[in-house]
Length: 407
Image 1 (cartoon, rainbow, N blue to C red):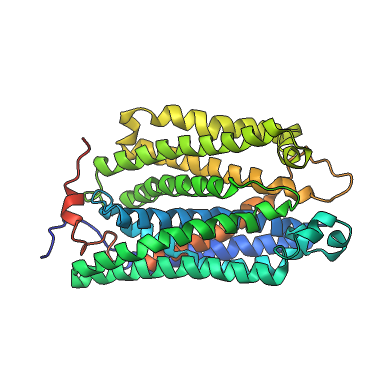
Image 2 (image 1 turned 30 degrees about the vertical axis):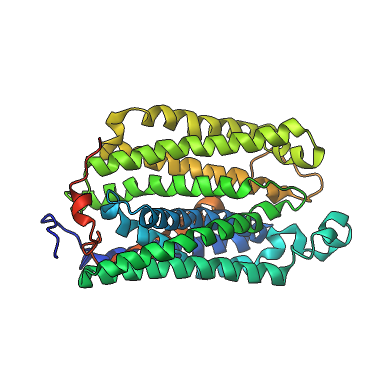
């Protein structure tokens, strides 16, 4: 039975090609400038690869956060989130474009991962012991599995949702629910190992079994913080002004608050267990992040990634008003970027004799690669949304979502 949707702009229509073109131009400009900087300064190629990997993992985390959000909504048969799910599906499906952007990382593995350098492996017994897992062919195989799982889940969940706009078939809802059950298990396994491979293995002497949960927590928080920013931009241009209400923003704000606390809990748990054990091979990872300028960034993350947004989102008022919630979302996205910088960039000095490891190696390349990958990420989102409604108009729970009210 057709659902009554508010009379408003729910399709990008003729704006989509222009937005897509501008986003692609931003992406091309960012990566071209990055390439020019890389080849024009000493050590620029290595520095560019490190910036590229960090920013790639940042945007990958947003897509993965969107994917798990969509699967959770299907598994829980949630009604409130139907009107925000199409945007979530599009962000999740961007992982298909990120596969292409992952290719340069394979060419720069020698600069990024110490375990790919034969001279280091030959002189390091621990790296030799880890070679059955940390080797290039097996790394590539694992990445193919990760992206295969993510691409398959995100593509079909989006495609079936779009098909339902025309067919209005409840059977598609049941199909998405059934696929989300094994999908979320595969997601948990692949995201955990991907975080080990792409980030943790950059210091192959250090390990943490909670690292995957840490990356997941930041990914989900980053994604639910991105949603208010996207809806704010859409509303400024006249889209979705009635279907998504203060009630939906209130729930997104509660998720932002909840996962701010969750991220802080996981981050502190990892730090407490490792620091209290006081094993040199484990505490060294944190010691590098507490010396010199890195110590200031660590305290900035404590304040900016937890204390400030926790206080700001604790009250009802800012969670129900998009003009306040969107700036909080943008603030958390910046903190999430700094968090991944803190996780990744100290390893820029790994194995470099005489390097001043207390200095943050900030470079213009960090911003140009951010704009480059971000431009293509935005273009991908627009591409997935250009021929469909911005809300799932055929979902049988749409009426429930449109009339949703918080208790």
